[in-house]
Image (cartoon, rainbow, N blue to C red):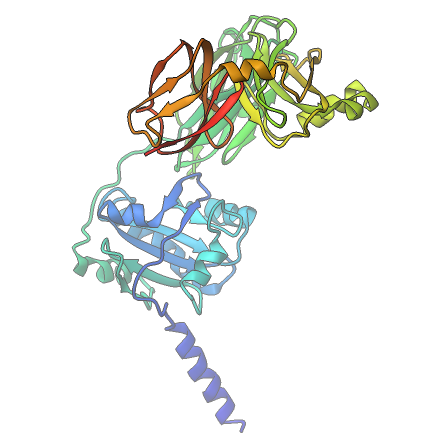
Length: 455
């Protein structure tokens, strides 16, 4: 037994080292790599590139053997810009572990880890049924896995020689400088939220904000100020500045750095804060359509940055404090910014309710509640009887004729309750519906509702 066990272990070990994916056809995945790049495997393949994937984890001894050869062959074949696209997928490394790994070895091709958005590294490794790490596979543009394992990888030539028979040729890498894109997500008179997104060669970056050109007017070089005093980040970042001066221009500067520690050019973006905002006011219109349906229209004023509205039973509303009502409205997870129209269905008939709206201005200051009381009953049944509603043709394709007597407001609503068309008419009206999608709609004429099908 003492002689058999070491031999058995050696056989098992030798089998595992050469283990490969059992798949012959690629399985698609979508993910966001460590460098912020959005990866869609089939999209890359459909673009005509081969895809080389190393399935690994950073603490395996094999990964340390492969890493420099992968980097050298990546550069030999043109840095993902030509015939082949490199990526690595970790089975066990989280974002911090993957970042430490890439920083240590200067890996510039995409790395997908266990915390990647979309399909994570461990999920993709399981999709491909990888038995041992590292495993390196090559996928052709027709989605066939043409190499289920590249082994051994003792020299960079082992990878180059494996890929060359497929017409994958040597290319120069373009000189790509580290850059960071900046986008203002939100601003007010005293605050600003900016999102930073580095490109795939940017390992880290420093940024600062200054009023006007004050940072450029210092005796110290701007690059040195950013390097010593700037906020340092790697990867995507959302940053908030507060206590700013209203109606003032600020400059944001970014100093990017690649994996080799080389700085790119300083980037600059000028942004002005807003004027001090007036109070948010929401205008509410309420129209009872039937004893169980109500149409509402909410219109925010120019100072409103965000608002919410809803319906309350009278007895519930009167038992709540104003702060509680505001909390309920803002907890609905449906922030609104523009005019909103809605039909509320299945309301209790002959019931007193309140339509309530509240908004915040662009300085995040809460406005006053707008409250409109109403009751779910029609004011005049005779009025509805005077309107003889007939819609032809129904189903319709391009136009519908609404035959009625007298003046009317005609509103067409989709299945979600949104008003998609509104027409004022006297007697008969022809309405163009070619711009509406096929489906079921509801036509409301002075409170009377008929179903309309558009084919």
